Image 1 (cartoon, rainbow, N blue to C red):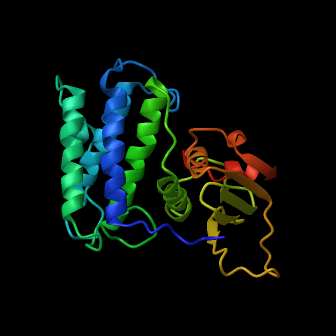
Image 2: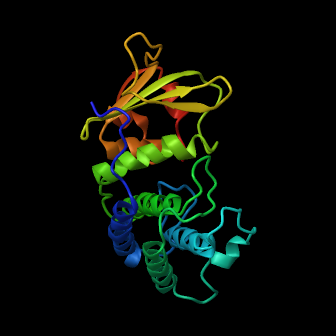
Length: 258
């Protein structure tokens, strides 16, 4: 087993994903009514989805190239929304092309603020832009046409991001008072993850390559499925019941970030 070995994800990998997932998002929303509901984002319409993703691009563009790790000044969400009367798709197109060209031009090791307990470099935003676009591409397709699975290696990196970024940053949607060890397995990539839920509400990602048979790491819950279904379950887009489950399923809910 590859265990906790990360995908060989880097700037080029994430930009390639962004260049694929962006047009797929655009295609899904092009002919959809702006007031059509998005079932995977309760309360949202297609217009909300377009606005949210364009707003995210605008926020990234506002700070990613500053070359500093200090938090950007607080801004109003309206600053990144389409101007009154603007065509949402034309506005989105412009933001998407800007974020592609900006991230392509930036060194991934250049200093840049982020909200997670990890290296403050531009690389964070290469990865974040790829996965934000991917998840919302799935949302858009789910709302308008048949949603296509996420490419396996990209999805596995998305699982990595949830476990090494979102959860350690405290961005959990599930219960935080459960204790135990959860095992996740991607059946289409021969990848596995072990996550310890701690009594203080934190999480610890365990390196399966260094664990010994005598280590106390017996899983209390296990979920196995495709990398795409694992990532989508962690984001709350599909239920864990789509996966092969064993053990205390409540522990899986504690890993949700969306």
